[in-house]
Image (cartoon, rainbow, N blue to C red; front, side, top):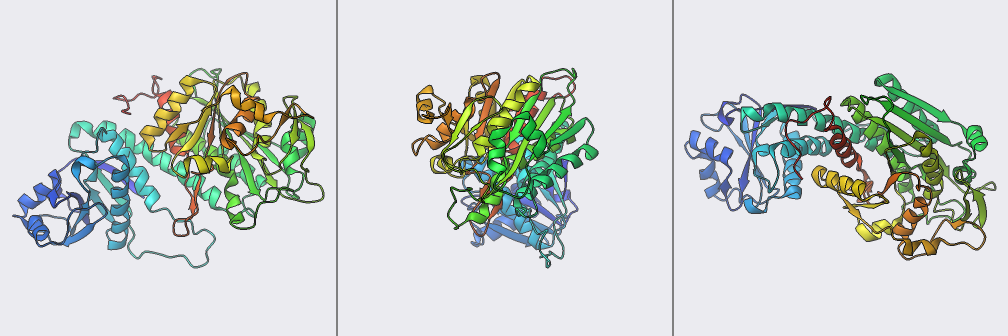
Length: 511
């Protein structure tokens, strides 16, 4: 899909389709009114006949509108103008793009980016339009022998801005949005692959291939014997039950003005299939446990997008990749292992495996003297119960980092919600036989999981994103990976880059 930015009158666009908004009840947006005036009331006449009310999600395709050069005009219902907020805007864009894809309009000019979204700038509207359009057309059919095809698919979208003065900023945002959307697609593709294809070694190969595609990249992969020698015993306790060996992937991107600048470290949980181990999960919906590497997919998608945008930062991506399966060699409930940090862990539940591979990865991150460390993990069902599919759970030991991530989530539409990381919860992790237990009981499960990780992050600023509810959708019609939290992470990295002279923004971002 190609995206472009343009400023111009709608009636002069020689294109397959022009897209304009209609408010409820039958109120014309500014651009729709211009077309109506040029066509001597053609649109308002149709609306008076009751063909469309302007309710959000309604569409009406018009052909041969007088005094216009476009083959078609697509009217898109936007609801009540004063109620047009972030979510409504994204829904409108999604509906418009999916409708266009079915009309045979291969290239269009869309004026929905000129709608007045409450409290949002033109730059925000362009950013969201590009990312939403790319998401609306996403299909994962790599493994199908018969692929559904559209005879005349949508190939090019031109988004309009009201003034030519806005073009430079809008073009920069378009470029950012397109690269972020590509990073989201990479994360979706990886997570949607089944566990028999997307194994730990497959993730390692994907990371290596990024080094050939982008400058400033290097990659190293630690094998099982390396992990054993270095003492990553918590990670190895998870992989013991599988015949598929683990991989510990370290991807480095160095593009800061000062090569010695402390890096931002992203740690992604990479359980390529999670059966629960000896603490076996119920068989219902266990196929969705291929998504337990969505944190790893998000790290790869984020680092790819950052490299495409040439962000002037030093980044490190750490991905502990394993399978968690039961066998005669598998770790048993009650086993005790000593982690890379030297702390002993009593494994009371082998299905609480994500925190075991992450704790060794978080300890490993210390050697980079990081500026901040952010881990991303489909960690707990408790987070799904607490926040559902809408917000990531966010817990952190550093308030400024928390605020930066929350703000990035608000701007990108990839929202997070802070949960408390209070010492009061630490008592639930006490063990009579080891330094720490790997579960804290039923109460506050998402919080006690983060409390467990916090014991391995004392030496740096750290944040944890629990994406168990947001990484994929279970609904049969929409089932699949979401690519989240790539938009949030990328906005955070763009915000961090915007203070650098190499990567400047012509206006501040609006939250």
